[in-house]
Amino acid sequence: MATRYNHSFRSRVNNARGHSFEEMILQGCEYYRRKGLAEISKTPEPFRVIQKLGDGEFKVRSAGKAQPDFQGTLLGGQAIVFEAKYSLSKERRINKSVLSAAQESYLRSHYEKGALTGVCVGVHNTYAFIQWNIWEEMKSRYGRKYMTEKDLGPFKVLTPGMIRFLDYENGDGENG
View 1 (spheres, rainbow, N blue to C red):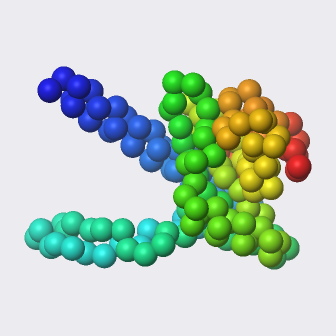
View 2 (cartoon, rainbow, N blue to C red):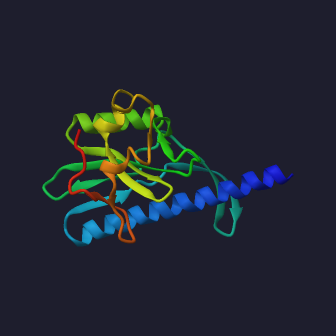
């Protein structure tokens, strides 16, 4: 029983951290919108109602292939498409496998058409934006299919109470 409780508690904590991470990205989107630099929105998750519970509540099931978490347009017309992934792993790393094959395919397709694509990651309290070409080459660049907090160093972004995923701490990030 204690194991189930611990797992449930850990799941709730991880879920709350993930929602906080996403909220910080949304605040970053609002920052760029107010500055006139971009119009970026969270993509709604497709779902299907499977049971109405009353009082405006219902059970839902994911429906169809989910699109990337965030999509929009940067000043000048370039599209931006990215996933948001948060990890509280004991190893303090982000695994390449956090993206599904469908998510990888979608990001690759947008990258090939000229969009700024990538993965906005949070590993504990380290936040970074990894451009798609770097994410895709993770194995050849690092010799493994994950990035540690140290590996994220060149890709760390400004986080003044929000995640400014377009603003690298070191100026412009590593473009690959």
